[in-house]
Image (cartoon, rainbow, N blue to C red; front, side, top):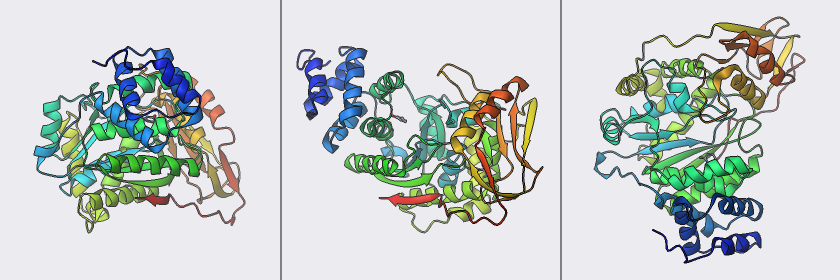
Length: 431
Ligand code: URA
């Protein structure tokens, strides 16, 4: 129990408001006192706003992260007999990479303990996608989690409420008080959960662009560098890739359709960008796990990754051969002119998929697993007037109008032969 009177929360808020810094003891006290309810939500909201406006230095961010780790349990895989590696993405549109990546890396004998979340707003959640698979369950006991990690190697499941509970409470508060977009708060939030999760190594996919948290590549780089430093300081071998999220990843945006596309990748096919990012992240994870010569592309081509996927889905009650849900209604949008597809705005497609029912507005809302968007062309592809650009899918045709509103101006067709500026998917690597 914190010594309630050791510090005064108002003094700490004033210090941050006036651009001062908080020391380790003050931050440890604050986080523990907030978790236990001695510091009130309104006090923590004021402090979060002061941090958003005035920032934190590297030592303060580290102290905040470690205090949030200490607020709950910390998993330990010492007895597992194999090394652990995990990936975290800051979230994007069509980002299903965890689905092929976790079994791919596990097929090399590396354990992948993926504690994932559900989607909120226009970015999808990994658990929502996997729940499209009949029978699959996200909730595992601690015994089931450890057993699956030892036997199958890959686990994607919901985090327990005991993992960084201070972050859970603070994140909900930030969501309601306009204080999400702060690099110290985002970095400490993400890294407290990953450090508490106990992984030996971690690869971060930090996205920038219209469909990402950070639109600006420079802010995304700052976030990535802050998180990589936090990982190193906590003894987790951490790297980051900065990746472009101006365009949706792959051809499927939704839940069931993203599972279908992931299975195509695991079968050695699938869209080039999904394969490229899956392989790039797998290489980093395998390198950090001590396997610099492993060839993830070969494991996709020869079926090893698919075998690990099937085992991972079956271990959590899912039937990898079951038919996935299909939406009752569809609406296809056609190209209005001949030319080359020059733009496909990720944010607009994310919002449209969300309005079709693929995402949720509130934590408690259900998602419609069959809802989403299938793209028929990607930037750089030649299109002709009347050819299909994308298909909206929903159980209720009344949803199409609002989805189409979100997509107004989201696609641009340039004259045939237009050279598009190169846009590398992986823009930088931060070690
Ligand atoms: N994801 C998190 O877990 N925390 C943040 O603050 C932002 C994104």
